[in-house]
Length: 638
Image (cartoon, rainbow, N blue to C red):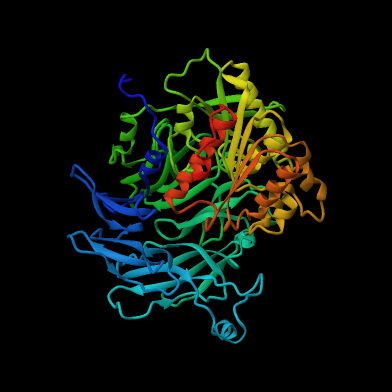
C-alpha cells in the first residue's frame, strides 16, 4: 500500500460513488446502455444519467437523464423513461446526436415498457385513469375512498410512434386485473401478462398469467396454480413460457415461506416441466434466447447468471461476485451486466470486457477488507456473515465491534463495497474510527437454501438473536472483538432484529434502530403487507397472540438498558412510524438513553443525498460516543 494513503473515503465521497444499473444490450451486441446514479449536491437530489458504449470505441458517452433504457429492434434508436411533471414518459432518441423526442403523454405516467418487435411502437403499463364517478364524488363530498376497494389497476397500452398525435390504445380492462409484468413473443403476436386481482399487496398470492392475442384482443387465462416470482417470458418460438413457481399449492404458501423452482408451460399441450430439480435456490428467468433460458439466482454470498438449455445449465460468469441487471441478446451471443467482485463496487461489463472504472476512488484511499466469516449458532445451525476489518488489521488486537444487520429477511449481506446496500451506515468511516463490523446472514436470509430460509418460521427475533450473539461470541473467542464494546444496528427487518437484540440482552453498549418493527400485533394492523407477518408467524394475532408477544421487542421493554438511536421516515407505509413512537416511549419510561429522529417526507429510504449524509453522520456520532467515549458535541447540528 502507498504510504501516503492515510484516509478512508468520507461519507460524502461514499455517497458520490456512482451506482451503475439497468444494463441493456442491443441485438447484435454493438451497443450497451446503462444508468449511473449520482448525487447532485447543489439541488440535493439524485440524478440518473444514461450512458452508451459503442463497440470498438475507447470510452462511454453520455446521452442525458433518464432510466430504463431499451434498444429498438434494429438497434438504431434507444428509448427510455424521463420524468415530466413528476410523471415518467417514454422518450426515443437516435444515435446521430439528436435530442430525445417525447412519445407518450400519459396522465398517470408510464410504469414500464417494451418495444413492439416490429419497431413501430411501444407496449407500456400505466395506472388506469380515475373513474368519472369518483371525480364527481370528490367535487360533491370531498376526497375519500373505501378501504380495500376502488383500486386503480395498471393496464396495458399501445402507442404507435408513427402517429404521435393519436392517443395510446388501451388493451386491457381496468377492472379485470392489475398487471405486474409482461413479455412479448418474438413474432409480436402474443403477450404474456403476469397479473394480480388488484394492486393490494395482499393479492400477491393470487397471481395469474394471461395470454393476450394481439390481432383480435382475445384474453386467455392460463391454469397455473403455483405461480410465484416477478417475471415470465416466452420461448424463442413462442410455444412455451417459463416463470418462477412454488413447489406447493397456493393454500400452503398463504401462511408459509415459499419453496421455489423454475417451471415451463407448453402452450400447445398444457404440460408442465421443471428442468432444474434439486436446485435449492430461487431462480428468476430473464430472457429465453435461441440458445436457452437466461436465468439468475443467488448462491450464498454470490449472485450468478447462467444459460439453461436441454444439455444443462452453464455458468456465464464463473468468478465470485454479485451480478445484477444482466441483459442478453436474442441469439444468446452477447451479454452485458453490472458486477461487483469481492471488495469492490459495481462495474459495467460487456461479455468479459469491463466498461467502467467506478472503483478508482479506492486507489487513492485506504479501503477496508471484507471476507466471509462462518460460525455455529446455539442450535448448531451454520451461519455465515461478512466480516469487515481495517486495511492494517492486526489479528492480535481486540477491536470494538459493530453488528450491521441486513433487512429482508429474504436478503443477504455480500462482501462488496456498495453504497446502494449500506446507504445508511458509513462502514468506511466506522473502520477508520477503529471498529470492525460483522454483517450476519441470519436464518431466513436468502441464498442458503429453502430450509435455511424457513428456519426462523414462528421464531423471528428469538432465532435471529441467537445467530447474532453467537457470531459476536465467535469473534470474541477468536480474540479480535472486545466483548465490552459491541454495538448493533440495522434498518427495516434489520432494525427489528437490532431492537430485539438491544432490548432482549444487555450485551450491547449502543444500538441504532432504523425503520423497525417493534410490536408485531400493532404492526399487523398498520402495515401495507400483513401477509408478510402471517408468513413468518403462521397466523393472525387474534388466533395466536402468544407468538406475536414472544417475538416482539416491546414485550421485553422492562429489561431494556441499551442506549438507542431511533431513525424512521414519517411516510413509511411498509413499516409505519407508530413502531418508532412505541419504542421511543417505552425506552423513555425505562429511563434508557434514547434519541428519536423522524425524517419528514421519507418512506423507506431518502431521495435526497443530504438526508443520507445526516443518517450516516448520526450513526457515526452515536456509536463513537457510546462505545468509543468520544464527545457528543455537535450532534444537534446534524
